[in-house]
Image (cartoon, rainbow, N blue to C red; front, side, top):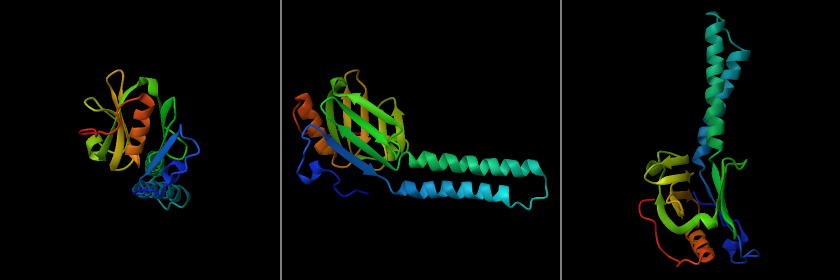
Length: 187
């Protein structure tokens, strides 16, 4: 589920040496979004062209249920179809979905370490999306695969799945003047 290189830094002609950008995409989420759209369509169809003779209450409950389930599925999955990560001289910023929400910005002044995680899975975090686990910290997981793990000054960790995560880790370590290389264990 990798995208093609999409920025100048990945092509080797970086016009902004102080910025790294990366992204990860999960095309499976589109199937779930389609299922949500189908639930909404069913609810609308029931409302517009219903031959139900058993009363208005069951009809309203069915329409509202289908539309509500469809909206939850549609917007809940579209928010995590992809993630965009941007690291500059001041902060790491993570934006999810097409609207960039939810969004997280972590100043590099709060980061004390960065590690490459070669294999992050949704099962490790309890599914896709924004996640929190007491023993692991917080994460944005949009697909299985590589990612980066930030160690924050307050002892917490932040994990995000992103393509070319090793380059991001090296970029952050260079900004923080830390040694490059290294892999996170059990991200």
